[in-house]
Image (spheres, rainbow, N blue to C red):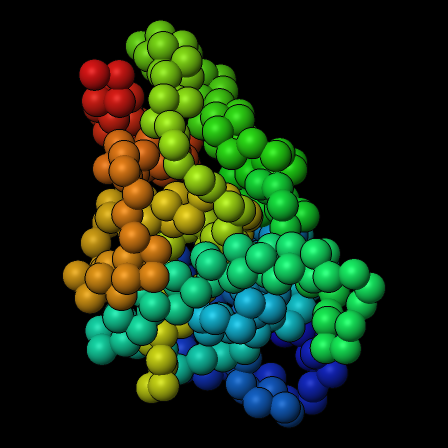
Length: 309
């Protein structure tokens, strides 16, 4: 692997640095190279390239918003022995603490970025001709993403849809329910889902949803801070409802009240937020069930029953 890395990165020096780590899905190791320190994620699963390509596209999309810091992606490299590595900028990170409020503020800006671009585009379209100072705006009017992303190692369907309720029901919940059905044939889930999918539109009455670029998997393990501010990483991005982002952040801790206060100062909670948060957490519980097994069945069933009350 190291010979391949040297060749692909065009470096004569490749020395493992002290920083290594691993999550539930991939291993990681820092290396010193001729042009500085890099961080390398390693995964030997057959889905590794699909996963890393999606993560690279996600990081690039977040960088373009110029809102919240992410590691700069460099290269996805296929290994001759199977699997893949993903090379990115090395950052000296520690646990999120003093920059929590700043992360809330910057995350809200990231979620508002596309809305602001759409408003800019709309303003430009109302102007006859192209005056000085007007730019081509990359505004997104649908829900989805330009490439497949993975939440964990499972691929997500990101086909563009103009309706959020349809996108979320079909490409997030139904997709996960189908996997549960295939693996476990769970009759109770099947019956609850048959009722719940008919009720989902009711949770979105009078809610205006503008496509927002999301990190997609924003739990406490995917946020940190450097000396000069917060960092988010391991994204599985798509354009969706901004509230979706705050679902997993509330499931496993890692975010304090200053984060939420700063966020909601820019994006206030809309009516029905609490129920929709449950609906969005259902995706993550189903996804965890499909990754890690039946320990997450109880939480999935509980939320479905709660939503049907």
